[in-house]
Image (cartoon, rainbow, N blue to C red; front, side, top):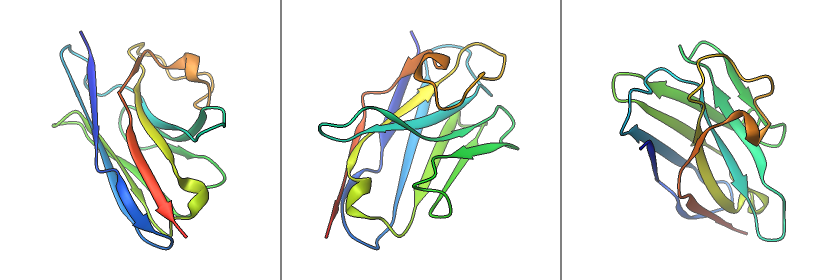
Length: 127
């Protein structure tokens, strides 16, 4: 009943930028904790970034810290991930996530703290 639709992925050269977006729809899930995970071929799924209900608190994986910004537009029930200075190791399928539970996650990096996942959008960074 809750759907997350990602967009904005694509092919970019190293050093380039992309902005991913994720729109939530289907149920009254406005102003809920949201974020992004990614999974590269042969690698485990890892946390990328998270943002709390108001947008006042954000969290980032160490590998993207300083190169990315997560933001949200609660009027549109949409979260964004701006990524700059992209590296080949950023290549992965990026998944949008939403926590339906009103409480804050115990750990933003824990996939089990999220309740809904999008279908993913491919980000490919060439060297």
